[in-house]
Image (cartoon, rainbow, N blue to C red; front, top):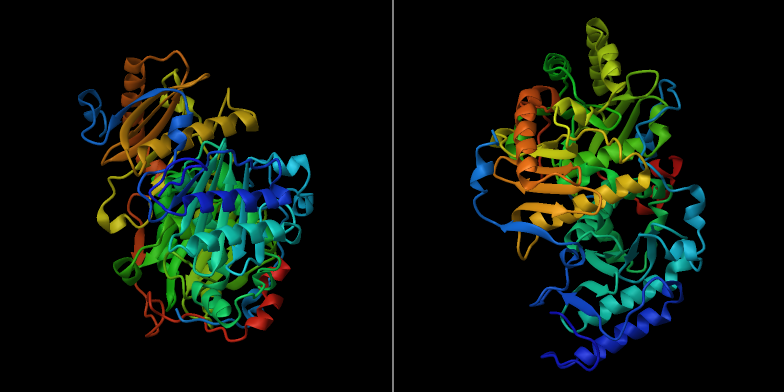
Length: 572
């Protein structure tokens, strides 16, 4: 339900009390002074609600849209487990070599070290586009995107007071809209996550980002462990277990600002000749050992190829979100460049309560090509390391590293290759994937070129993509096609049963011209699909140990929560 401001009528008897209470508690949060002003009218959307709160779609210039249904005729033919915690140091790392200091490609404008101690009363802190907070049900601070958690403890306490007050009325707060700010709340078990944003992102998109933060935390600790910890001690300080992992969460929130992978729920492949990709997949397919379930080869955070255990594909799928979290973990820390790493990792979308055991090793001196092997057997380090050596030998024989290096010299491609002058940029996600291969959605996008050379211009374009995505996937009125005329460009977004497409054109393009460009673009993508996508990922069969590797398997058994703070993440 949506609560109006004081003085407005409502069918809820205590709406006036809730409105006054929320205004009071946020005014009491000194660190919010200037960041968020709750006027005489504000909206809080509850899970039990009826009318929806205002969406970002009402804050953007006019565009034309088609409600859900058949695509327009002129376009339709153009588309061709139960875990506790123990010290993880024995699994943390087995360094057998030294790598270079060059890591995976970083997002633009990463968080500076000083921002962890940023003054929360300073104007620079208040002027941030987006803040993310994580706290426990007891109001204990766990993480803040900017500023020190201790300095924000009173603010987080106020947030939890508001959440608890709404819960006392058998409701759950979801969002608050005030002026140009949105506050989105997500509660997952004993953790409460809050986003304060003044971007064009919709509530649904902000909620998805908060879930990514939650999943990243779960990937380090497992959901069962977090739940059990707070069942035993509700005011437990979870930062003890997450010590040293703040940079991983910082990196994740950097990525969601500019990486289309998170917006589209897909992974991007490094453009390579299909013959090379197939040869690399065959190498991974042959280098197997019992209980090995996923073999993944990546280069600068782009997927080269992946092979999965056949039984795993039949039982459940590898979700793109799990791969995003894994690649962010690898890219966020230079510790993985030190040599061969063996560490427990949870894939929360696959199984939030169990661990896999990840073998992570770079294959080249520049630390750009990385092999990730996931096993269900915590004692399989040497067997899995032998698989890596077999992959290395095969790549050396085929000169595969040199071929990948050639592809990395231009890790993306120019939009000019499409051969249409009015097209500036696009994002394309194929949806017509056979059910047997739907486990790994993919997308492709060219590099951003002029006039999107500066970080501010790239961010502006990506904000427009966020807006178009929110209209296509709106819960209340989803559209199939949007033609949007912005100040400096014209955009068209289109979703069908076969693909999801976002295109950016020069500002003077007409509707007929845009349709003509899209027709040519779809033909080009069809011709290049073997180079841009993994169409038919390979499988292999191993001999798993009974009880391991399934969705209900226990995985790693951790028993001592107190000692986990001395584990792997303190060394990152």
